[in-house]
Image (tube, rainbow, N blue to C red; front, side, top):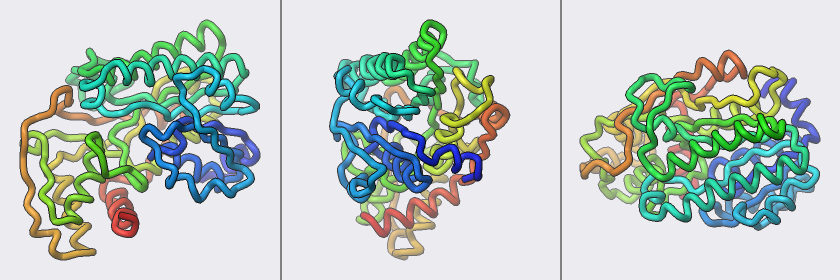
Length: 331
């Protein structure tokens, strides 16, 4: 991390909502390493206590068990905080199709609670996790921030509504906001278990057990897989940027290359086989396409580069090697 950012982070007080989750806990770690004071809010719906256990002894870390659906929990969490990194949400397109009401309650009502609490507390900047799902049925590749289509799932609708609310809170109340449209984030601490597990940790765990992973479709669907450290860089740049033109915007957070699922599985087998040669003989199975899935996803990161200086350091291969190594040691 560059010296100016390190200096700004020192003694800054940052609230990370969803701070016990995959992205949130990684953010908490990096912020603490750079001498920021961190408040973590989580209700353990999808986050894990084990992700933050080692942080609890730090004098600069405080944990609040609470739910963003309760305004009072949000108000308690933002007290005396400079910045908010809002990661709390119910992810997963399939989850939202199975239970749209809960996804809406958390992702829309909870988001609105956080905006209200942040506005009333005089937060300097509210940076929030948006989503590439907002591009919906748009066929344009690469995805550019100002060209979106119709959402294809309740989850996508909730994340688009977040952007609309953030824009209104800036225009009506002067709250500085920045939205980060994440593209298929992966890396250490991403949970391989559960019905809504992301594809990379799920496939890694299956390969390690010599189980055949199931690809939805023929494997030609492609994604802009984005390593966690790129996402951390973008959150910190968004939070601390002095560029006034960069604020009250939405940005793609990605690497800027796409990999299809067949290529992904090939890379996972290659890297895991370095730890266990038997994994290269595990077959892959194919199933039906999933409802709400977008066939291809590829981001332009030009806007993030020009306005925030974002320069992703980890491509898919470098990120996968790091992630596979972490999973091998920790699963």
